[in-house]
Image (tube, rainbow, N blue to C red; front, side):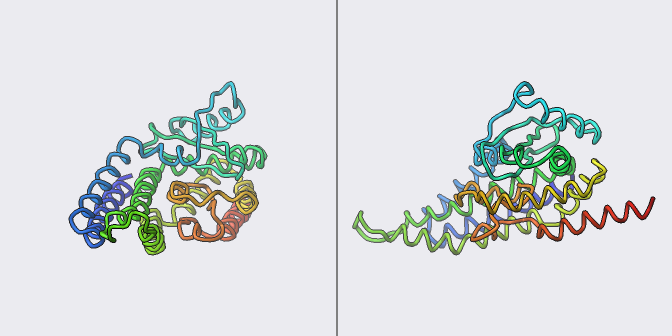
Length: 287
């Protein structure tokens, strides 16, 4: 927990300084003022609404136990076995199968499943995915994920600085849009680096292992990961800023192709599957 808190603070301060510097270079005093406003707004968003950014991006809504009793049963059983509070449950009307957890602490955590996930996986596989997300919650990975998602959104929003540049008196010029596109192309790798260094990929391996230990069935999670990757290719998400900024919180990368791959904080699915199957073989040999 303390490591993730320190990483979150360091990541926020570092990106804040960089964003203000970029704003000054692009728009002088007005650009710097705009950048400071973005940074302050990002801090407020992280503190008050950090766990809801990904939920909003996925158009998720709270789901009741009456509506999804099986989902509640599975989550309650796994949370009890893991000795952690049960998260608030949300449902996203997205066909692409995926899940994610959000929240600054286990007591404020939320767990969201897409409708595609509930339609695609059987109970064994669903338990594996939910256990994976519960592992993120217990390890406080969701705190650094919320900070990274907010900062990624702020960095991509820096394209708006181009509208502050003095480009002449014509109000019909397309120059701001052109510069905005160029800045997006330049800033996208920077935002991806924030996700990569802020979140890292080792956390996915750790969460996979903890999920396997919790369920006692690493093969089920491996099979679920393969189905999630196939579903992401069949039902790709639109590549808007909010979804790109939240891609790293998902169980698997929802953008298997194109610019979305820059924002992936996930190891290759094949590597995750191999490790889970090796873990199963190790357990069998140890019996």
